[in-house]
Image 1 (cartoon, rainbow, N blue to C red):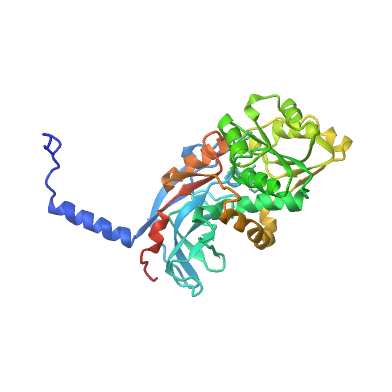
Image 2: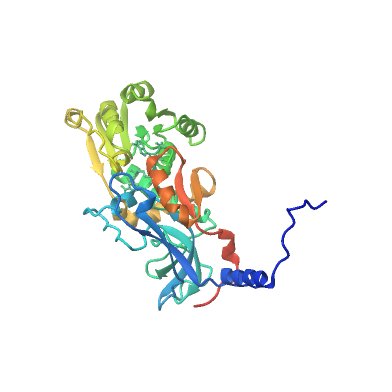
Length: 373
Ligand SMILES: NC(=O)c1ccc[n+]([C@@H]2O[C@H](COP(=O)([O-])OP(=O)(O)OC[C@H]3O[C@@H](n4cnc5c(N)ncnc54)[C@H](OP(=O)(O)O)[C@@H]3O)[C@@H](O)[C@H]2O)c1
């Protein structure tokens, strides 16, 4: 092949070769990590300027600790609440400090006997490339069941939320007609499939026609609609002429109002989340009197109170995930530096389907030899 003039690479200098060698060595034994800190508290919608990417020296594990190379981290709606300085069920993130949240990765340096090098873990020190994790807080994961990222979604907190919400809070029955909002995403996609496996009739809502098609064609929902088309009460009446028995609420606002109209006597509402209100005020339902008139039950819950159900959850759900009976849509964003934007886009909706996961490192590197602390 003829060389094109002007495109010939410059001859390598020895300095360049030494630089490249040093870089290769530092990739094998890194000396630095990066983390995302909360620079300022969002008012209304979060913006990239609320976050700061900072390089830090690679931390060393102490006794009973391990150093984990995070491969995936989760961005979740509840993190928005922790960015405000308001009292809640979890303390606010501190300004100027790395944000926390679920992550998975593998041990690259260990001072904890039960967690040797290469062990895969889930822990709560996401938003950073490398994390020091105390062995007492680490949760080993079995990546033969599902890929590591699944332990942040379908086999993680959001899957457990769907499981607890449907069964423990909602008292799901096979005869139920169940309506689930934000049905194509992390919690909703699992809730819909679990309800269907139980024999229930499922109706889902989502914010695009593509997601609606996905709900019906891939996730097995009996019916679905785009909430952005409006006329929510009318759509629910058309899709569930006999009314609904259980509403799994991820959204609040107008969809809650429509569900209150569509619910049958003695219907139940699982108040899982109200994402329409996390960054701006949403109109409250104007028909709360339905709760009285129809003798409805509305019950909220926080999944962190239900950790004791994790064993039952894995027993019931993991085999169905492994055999493909339960699908787990995931959307990946690459690079820690893109985590703030992924978080913002996840909150806004419309861009991703399923669980939003930030990929921090190639999981295949886990088989590479790693060093002792
Ligand atoms: N109670 C608990 O312990 C617990 C635990 C986990 C999660 N949650 C709650 O469960 C809900 C779902 O969480 P997730 O992790 O599964 O998040 P997610 O649904 O994966 O992601 C957010 C989705 O919310 C939808 N959305 C955003 N703004 C909306 C609006 N104004 N109206 C309707 N839909 C809107 C978007 O979907 P579209 O693209 O379709 O618009 C977006 O993709 C959240 O409210 C969360 O806070 C509660």
